[in-house]
Length: 303
Image 1 (cartoon, helix red, strand yellow):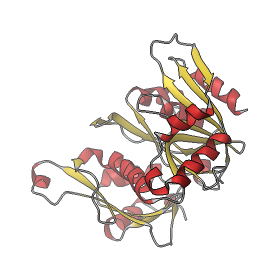
Image 2 (spheres, rainbow, N blue to C red; image 1 turned 90 degrees about the vertical axis):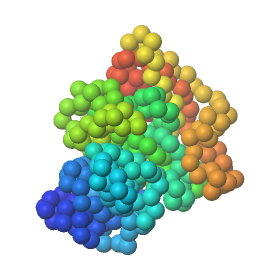
Image 3 (cartoon, helix red, strand yellow; image 1 turned 180 degrees about the horizontal axis):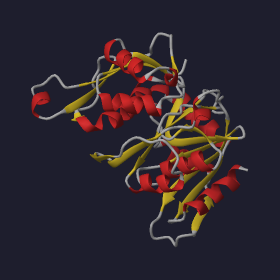
Image 4 (cartoon, rainbow, N blue to C red; image 1 turned 120 degrees about the vertical axis):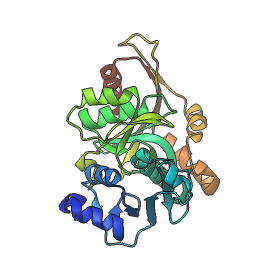
């Protein structure tokens, strides 16, 4: 049964009073909250996800803080298995906090895979990994490839790489976009369901876009084909880009900076990363204001 098979009233009642178990690709969460705007966003953006009967891996709660500040200024807390990893945020930021909290939950608790901060997409059985620092444009490229170029979304935040480095596992959740990227993708794919834009977060203005239904269900692990380090360069001429092949040794050093759980996996994590890079073609991509030019270059790499 999918979330969309429930009425909103049934869904919100379960979230408020007993929790609803949502089956993500790599875990099951039990979500508890009473915030109507948060529940409306989850009901909309997670409508294609299954309601699970399994024991939940993580109990996730979004609640008011217990301090007296709850009466002075409306805030929201994220809890995972009763632990509170973040300071409370303004009440209006409940849904972004949920998404950031789920990323934290994965990177701090799931160690069956090597986890890399990157966008991940699949096409024709081949995986594209795009690591990137804030402002690099990885999520913008990820959204454009997902919604208009026929790629399956694995994740806009985390690559789950298997123990042999030859398979990457799906982990699709809503795509997070910030600031100018929000309007770019709204214009590029105007029919995509998205959350309200939340302003004044620690990342600026934030919105989340619903993953396609075919990226949520029946997606199998796939083999890596390319690792591309994107970088948006505002000073490049609009239709110009710089695509260069990277040495695998340089890729190993740079990609290691984006790994979350080296400290847990130790040598085995380094081994997985080395195998992943040996199985992939590696590039850097600098692009200007023309999104279509960058997408065409990526399509050619993935052919």
